[in-house]
Length: 184
Image (tube, rainbow, N blue to C red; front, side, top):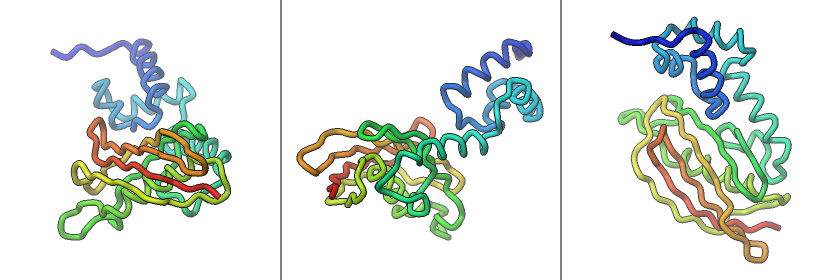
């Protein structure tokens, strides 16, 4: 027998979950709370929490206002968080155009591009170029998976910056890149 939470308890936990991870889908929440997707949507409406698309759009708009080095059209993925010179987070959902037809595995150029544009966005300068990169792919990424990349500022020496980017699908690490960037 499965024990379900009462409405108030569920809404409290739902609110807390979306505060810590605003990119959780209604489907994931429905499974977590063992209720229908419609129940989750009603709970969100009562709590005044917008749907995932609106939450994502809000975070992206707020973050992109700070970026000088990359324009919105050049960015690969959706920028979710950005603290210039410290850290940044982006999300990339793997769509059919990004995968090899036969294997349904995401092509590496998309994963690298997401990590590289995220690293570049972290630097507060008009012109930022990638000097070198050390890349490690941990496992293949498949169609419909969501890649969450987190860039962290490691150090600065003159006009050169070391940025580490770790990309994950769920809790599993799929890619690590260390980028040396040059600002002009």
